[in-house]
Image (cartoon, rainbow, N blue to C red; front, side):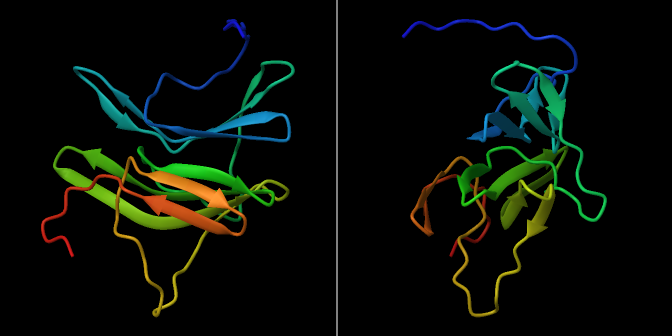
Length: 153
């Protein structure tokens, strides 16, 4: 196969790296990421869809009843049963560096992000970014990653 550049018109996401994307039902969905340069460093928490037939971008506005995950990069996502599952990542601003171990689910049919609340008895992965995260049947597999922890377990 040969790579081919497709043009687009109109609105599109600003430049970024360390974002995540998934494909579902004819669309490429992009969440988060960072803009890193000599004089600028910014984390995004915007959510975009590229129609893979028309190559038109659309910003996905969150449902008014909820909020999307916080700004982050280095997180991971996969599609499972009509949902996006998002875990982890990190946020950095000046001297504030946070690594996440939160779990979010996005429902395509209702346009709603929901943060999963862990039970007190759950074994919860340590906060991290830049890890491997995949779906296998009805299970998720998480491996590796990076975090600056002062007192790792």
